[in-house]
Structures are given as structure tokens and as C-alpha cells.
Amino acid sequence: MTAQVHATAVVDPGARIGADVRIGPFCVIGADVEIGDGTIVGPHCTITGPTKIGTGNHFHGHAAIGGDPQDKKFAGERTELVIGDGNVVREFVTISRGTGTGTSVTRIGNGNWLLAYVHVAHDCIIGDGCVFSNNATLAGHVEVGNQVILSGFVGVHQFCRIGDHAFIGMGAFVNGDVPPFLMVAQDSYGRPRGINSEGLKRRGFDAARVSAIKRAYRTLYVSGAKLEEALEQLREMASDSDDVRAMVEFIGRGERHLLR
Image (cartoon, rainbow, N blue to C red; front, side, top):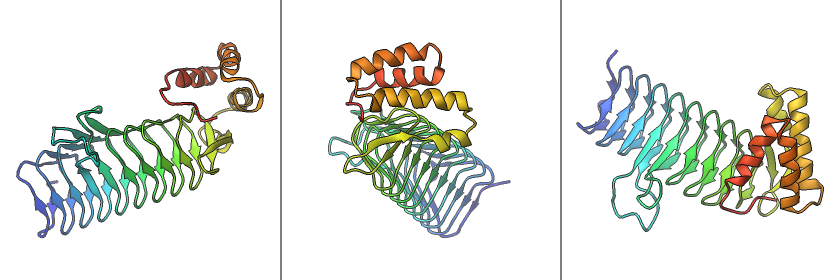
């Protein structure tokens, strides 16, 4: 089925629109924009290129996608936004392209839900299956893993990383790396408050895996050990647990301090 474009929408001749795409009233689709099959673009959306969007996405009204990065160093160099398949992007979400001084690309994976007023800044990388609740905001160069939940009004500082299956509670401000599986709650800047046990159970983690992650958490955050001492203990535990090994490897790649 050919694309359905509302009469009031403006689509640049250089845009590449897939089959069965629906573009609603008063949308503006710029040059060098690619929209994959079956994607819905709701009313008053703006999509600026270079932007590549996969299949089966749904952009609700007034989303602003692929705009110039909000970075004073940006000088008009060619950068891009790449969005995967099956994402839901709600009203007034803003997603910026990358910067030439960064990775040059902002990248969003598959099956994510970005709820109203979410902002994803330049050079961010988001995995698959995440949920960002209303007004959650990522500064530039943030990396978010898979199956991560950001509650409403969460703010994440630039260059921070959030590991797979983490849960960030409402209003928490994150200014350091959050290892996989953790739950972070509000306390000025967010502080670890345990593991995301409910989320892990929902995703099929059995009791043995959850128990190993809890032991790792207690070693890292409750034991009172210095970071290097705790990491040495985690390395020993990692021989029996792929999940603990993932935590150790995540911490080892960090460039900012560990949220602790």
C-alpha cells in the first residue's frame, strides 16, 4: 500500500517514504529523511534529516524529531539520527541528531516507549525495550541499555551510562554510572536503593540469578568495603554468575565515577 500523506503536510522531495506510512495534518518532513514501512506520523510532527527511521513506529502529535543538537559547538556539520523499529514516541517528544565533536549519531533501538515531553539529546544511545516516562530527560552522550525504565521527571547528566534492566525512580537526578539491574531512588542526586528485583522477575530471571545479583549488590553497596575491595570480591563471584560478570565489566568501562 502506498503512503497516505495528508493534504496539509509538507514532505520534501528528497524524503524517502516507505509503504503504508501515514503522515498526518500539518506535518513537516525534511530532506534526507527516511521513514520505514508502516510508520505513523501524527499531526503537527516535524522530522528533520539526516534521519533514518525503521518500520512500524508511531510518532504522536507535535513530536520534534532529528533537529539540530542543542550544543554551541555544533557548526552545521553532517550528523544523523537513527531510530529502529516498533517504537512509540508520544506528544512533544524531542530527539536531537548527533554532533561532529561526539559520535555524529544519536541512536535509538527497537520497541521503546518515549512518553510525553521526553527529551533525548545529541549523541545518546538507547537500547531496546526501554520505557521513558513523562518529562524524562537525557543530556548529551548518555548511554542507556536494554529494558531500562526512567520514571517521570528523571534527569540524566551528560556522559552517564545506565545498564540493562535498571529502574530509575521518579524525579531522581543521575550524575554517575548506574550498573545493570539496579534501582535508583530520589535523594538530591539518585542513590542506589537495592536491585530492580520486580523487573527482573517479570523478565524471567530465576531465583538463583536474582540471588546472585543481590549478593553482588550487598558487596558493592552495603558491606562498607572500598570500591577496589568490593570489585575484587565481585570478580571472584563472577566466575559463577554471568550477571555479576556483566556488572564488573560495566563498571570497568566507566569514565565517570560510579554511583555509590
